Image (cartoon, rainbow, N blue to C red):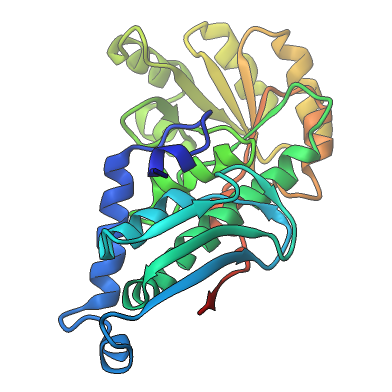
Length: 292
């Protein structure tokens, strides 16, 4: 029997609780108080149907466990056959899932299931495009916290499906000192001393810098684990790598686009973070075709 776990990308974790909560919220939003009144009015209860979830473009699939959970939430009598699992590359016209069961449940689940697959496959596909342009370098492409409210775990999972890596999930799992923290705390040395005194032994500390002078100051303190190089041009990134001499992990951020990512990777930085992976990913075109 196919399960949500069997459809997950095996190299990226997504909590069953996150899947269940997201599906419940989406169905609550769509069904409202009276349910799918169109299907109730037009489709006899005993009617059964078969449907095919089809990719209408080429790319990387993600979100199939959520589509399955949506269908199963509406009927225990749904049978799903998966032709691929999350993180698979598909071509236009390829069949992804074959679904059979009560027609009402399939029709009611259609839009919610497609919304999940379209959104997450869009993130995975865009991420894969970024990753492809860094091939042959050591750099990893990472997402940010610029995610859709309520969907962060899902979107960060989709980034992993596309071959990217996750930055911190929230404010509580790593210390990232930005320019405003530095300004309020009274400078780089002061803010790093406070962060180091507070951080647990497993908590990493990253600090944002805008200039090479700030980078040198961070290196002199010996208190950071990583440095975010904010909006630096390529020449400055290369110089930052030279100055750093491999001491700290370097992350490029700001101005990271599909057009610029290859050149950024070639500078020798360890990471590049791009909010576009989640906030600007186009929807992946997919459809649910009924076959009676």
